[in-house]
Image 1: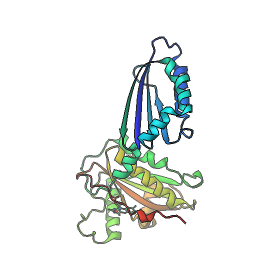
Image 2: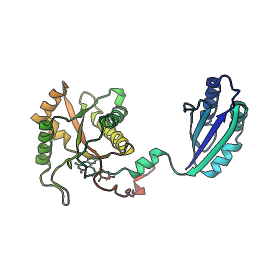
Image 3: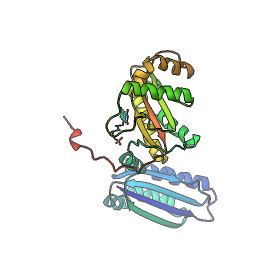
Amino acid sequence: MLRHVVIWKLKEDVADLAAVKAGIRTSLEGLVGTVPGLLRAKVYADGADARDVLLEAYLVSRDALAAYAAHPAHVAAAETFVKPFVASRTAFDFDGGTELDELIYERRSIRAFKPEPPPRELVDEVVKAGLLAPTGRNKQSTVVIRLDDPAIREAVRAKNEEIRGAPPAGRVNDPFYAAPVMLLVVANKANDTAVYDGSLALGNMMLKAHELGLAACWIHRAKPEIDSPLGRTILDRAGLVGDYEGVGHLALGYAACPLPAPHPYNPARYRAV
Ligand SMILES: Cc1cc2nc3c(=O)[nH]c(=O)nc-3n(C[C@H](O)[C@H](O)[C@H](O)COP(=O)(O)O)c2cc1C
């Protein structure tokens, strides 16, 4: 994949900057789906200098960039909406995937945390990413509960130890690896997609955590925990009425170890019939 970044400085005599910027944005972003090999195009025009406009595009290859440059739809957009208004242009092209590619590739489960908690705003961002995950029929069945109360945290830790038994070889005894933040994802059983919904939420949260420089690990056993009297206490304390499925926990914080290398995946897991 190729990242193609262009920075334009608009001419001093452009009077209606907003209209010109809108024209650049609409015409260039609209090329996705028209120009083969153009995967994504985003125009940013809210920088400190009102005359700066930036295009960030992703193309499948350098050959696709050459084809994009010559494509009639791109030429027409450039001639009509960009060139007449531009004083100068700088471009960068570099190999590499999108940030999401990198995050998906690099993310790993971390099982050693620093004691310092991350700022609340970052935790909130992680939770928001979970709440934005798709849910069956958009019933938004998932709820994320941040476990703040030291007594609840200790009870959850102990319950998980009890359910798990002895730790797997080479792992510390604490099922949450002393993570300073403990999140619990539950989903309303009234929705038959509850477990799927909650799993997607946790997937989003792990990726978001990695993007924000945080470490995370899915900690299981939320189902038996929520089905126990402790679970009812937690649901009651969170103000949740009704039947909830415990989907999983997220141990969250700053890593106290280096990020392990990415996992290879078995390509035979992709089939077609
Ligand atoms: C459904 C599910 C349950 C998991 N439960 C635990 C757990 O209880 N404790 C733990 O240390 N890791 C747990 N993990 C993390 C997996 O062990 C880990 O994702 C897997 O080994 C792949 O490693 P990676 O996440 O670094 O790619 C769980 C992951 C998933 C998806």
